[in-house]
Length: 110
Image (tube, rainbow, N blue to C red; front, side, top):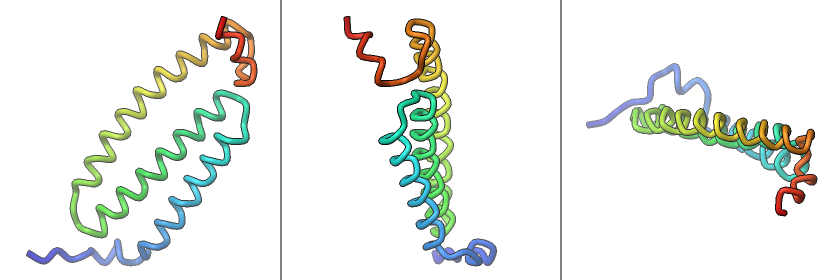
């Protein structure tokens, strides 16, 4: 059974999606490695997760297979739970040390 790629999907080549997702992922990695604010780091991790989602959706559309897009929905559900837990942790850190700088978190060891 031969599945064809719809004309709407073929208007943008797959390489463009790969370059876009790679750029998003690289910006996310750069933000995690260079920033000290916990909220900014958290946003950069979410940006990396969304770059993977873009690739999954693009590959799924190009193969005309909905499995990748279903997987994206599960990743988004896990990301929503991660946001809830992560922001709760960041709020508790802010309440304890009145700052979200990750360099000040060594106080939490003792």
